[in-house]
Length: 232
Image: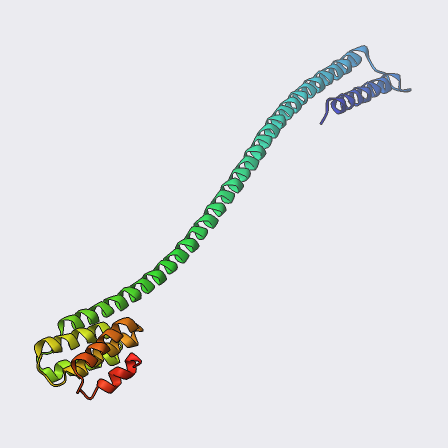
């Protein structure tokens, strides 16, 4: 209730009271004594003072209510500001968390890719190493495995020649020549040595071996083959 409304109510009541008094004083056929008039005037004055006090009290309450309302509005504005700030902070934090999650997923995917590539590369490298080791072991075995028996020695040399392991085959053939210098198969063994060079397309070395046969073993059955491969 505003101050203007309270003033209007108070003025209306005062006028009503005054009207009642005048009606009593001026009413035809009614006799009002002065003491009664004074008493009524005192009552009117008392009522007016009571109304003024009540109006002042209401005015004070209105002022207090307005102040309280203003205080509440300030607090409400502050609460809204804090809420907006909190929401903004939460939103920013969530954006940061989402970005960190995306980065972490990217790093995880990259790590998985690198790990898979590394595993694949390691497997390929291991296969290559295993193949090389197997070949090396075979060469070592071939180099150290020289049969003691004459027949086995020649058979092993022939086997290596068929496998195109010409270097090892020549080594065994030459071992045979060194061990069995008077053996009737010497011309044949020398011819086989020449063939290993020929198969390697080392024609100069093969021709040298065939010439030795022609010069040293003219009566050998392999002389015809030696002449053929020599181009004679």
